[in-house]
Length: 636
Picture 1 (spheres, helix red, strand yellow):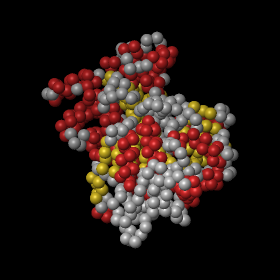
Picture 2: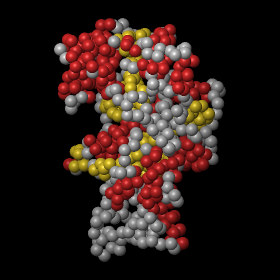
Picture 3: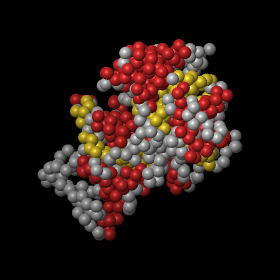
């Protein structure tokens, strides 16, 4: 009988110690021999020192999320042991630096007092790393002590390179190599992965490959009988390994976004940095693809420059997170009253204010819908995974130009920080629709930028177009753009703009408004990144003959009440799952459809949802063991 392979690997250490590089090496090595990957990074909001870790799930079947429980943990510092010792499953393994076992919790200054109190209740007053390891061992966890210091020292002697003895930064590569040696993955796969990660730094790559080979052989010989192994499997064709923010960035390149001003803010900055480092590309039909990426002095300038670029007819976007989006709200209204097509990619994180600046949340739904004073139309659209975000990005630009309004593309920290295997992005699926953008006007045309039309979408000129002169102002205006306070014209202009919301619902295909993964009497509704954990949880429940429906709502404003009403008409129990305190999607359901969710499953710890906790929460509802509102808490 062939058993499924499904393991979760965690590496942890101080922020700035190379945890992310190590996880990328591990992920690439596993993906290269055919495994599916879902990884996520967690880190504190400081540059260096606080606890950082990366969890990577490896499976030979399609996966969409992380799970509770660690199969293999690598710890080269004490805090990783103290934070995660109890999460390692029975028959799992902890690879740790034997030099740290006598470290007391009080000696780890980055552990906060609240967590220390909980730790002492579980272990004993003033516990050491060894106490935590003993606890894990009693629960069936295998311990693998290795002196990282001695390994480097031996390697330094063997290679006649004494500098290696002091290169503790290489502990991350040692940890990966120990792991893959114990898992008995092909050693060449490890070396190829290092070459890929350090492709532009050959000297560093060679140094790390020497350390990796030594560490791999060391662990493979010392710990030869671990229960779990990773042998090559059948690789799904056209599969890529991609980081979360790369989906939207590549989507912007592919669909013709040519200007992106931004101001640095976590977790949105990674997208702009990636765009900037790949700003010259080749696209179809021999069109050069050059994206101008500009770091501005603040978010107000970023959206102002985005609007100015869009007025020239250039596809323009900016990206930000919650606090930056708040600063953009006045200019968002200016784009709304002037019917300027822009895209704002909003990477949500936990608020309010600075909140948890490097942690996950879906707190900004209502903010996106209502940001800005007065009433003006905008589309709020949410992607559920990285593959989806590539295609949705192109759609958001199409929507902004077809309907001539701002589009807010909802992403979040969970998606931005994930590393996944998915189908290779298909450029042939990217279709560009620029709406009523004019190429030329005849000399005798009296152009009116805000002309009343049957569909209330006016022909759009661009700055510099001959005979296409127009005026823009933040005040109410007439059809040409000149300021007016006439009450009847005010009514007509407001009706013209606001009618676009009905027009969006009428003309946008149903499958772009919401996606049904099957409708059952008990049905989950959600939006954004919970999609993956929900799909995996529903699969687990189906294996127990429990049928659960799922509707992913992508168009959040205007709310697709007619199509959603059709999908939910026979549903008896609605479960709302989202990562915020208030159940904001549930509020939209009540406002627009006068129907309340029967249950809420919410998480607002700043940590991402796992399929395990969603599975258990839904099962509690099915078995009548659940409160109306379940709050998820898993995650260090």
